[in-house]
Image 1 (cartoon, rainbow, N blue to C red):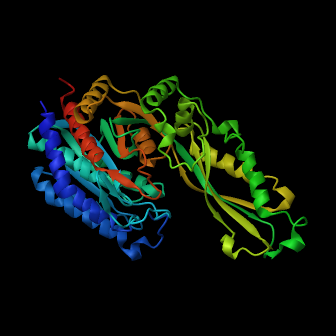
Image 2 (image 1 turned 90 degrees about the vertical axis):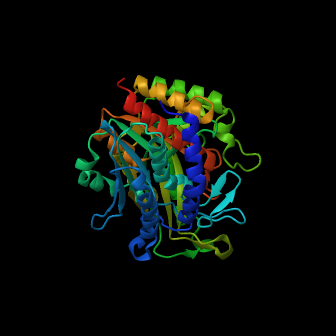
Image 3 (image 1 turned 45 degrees about the vertical axis):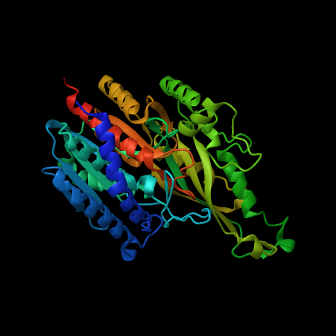
Length: 473
């Protein structure tokens, strides 16, 4: 029997004394994912981050008899931290996280910055702490807490990759390379997701897929005087708007092609209603709306379903135009836009990317030169039904750690590893959770890790591992 109070005290002390100071050091390292730092090998930041986490873990493995750690390196690929912890039960649990980071992003508040760790009350500000540097520490904290009480657990494999923010394109090679050592896990724990609030455990039930890319429209070989050319030469920006209207209804935001939609399961609609009741206006109020701005819909359930199951478009980058202060009266030769199209969890991203390319490139207005290059395609994921023992376990763990029962909701982002594992281990149970709650702003400015939630999620993982080992009885 696990003593929940002793377990949470153990984890809290470990975080205060050793985890949080190391996360502070980790935030200082600008180890951007390879998609945002093509020269990551030469810069050495990823290596520094790997060394920091691996050294911290290695120093604590003696408390876990028989445990081992290896930094696995395949030629030309980002490294993986692979930790094995023997268990008392003939079974395997796979715990996953990543250590690569999103780029800086502008707009950080005064005194804050992506590589400037700041602790303000319960918040540790800086890039990567919540997404997803805490994951290895959370997993090991859980195992160390169980060892403190001699509570049995299954063999545990911890896999920390360094390519997730780039679409995990290195990961399949590592999963294949390590297949025999990973084994056949009956439980997968992923600590790279979000939470609707900081008051209870949130279990992620689905993840949207992604079919992004770069759309470019060329109309001239060089810029010309706008007074001379406007009305004769169609604007590349206007043509780009026309092309985007093929994909998205600019009035409603609805994605037009029916093949990019999928049926939302009734169970997920029911869970969205429960989540909406728990969150209230925080469904949309967590975002930093400008004064007077309203959400896309006044129905909270519809907002949750928009965010978790419906395809939605975001234009995440633009090129081909100078800053307004340097913008002369020139009709520009081209406009480029980076598109991020989120897909339903059950949609196949490969045909979706083809649909996108065909839709945008066919019959270009005025014969303009139009090209779309797919980038960052990723599969979504829809969780299998929870086994009764796991449903009971996460409910008890949430009450013990947070004082409230578990809530369930899909997430709008993509974790490519989940789709991969869902196919590879179809009989496994999944616990996908995380610390990215209201205002934590992953990928944007002022990202923070809510430290109490990090500790509580670690405690939940420990309790679930204990129940997993004892589920047969």
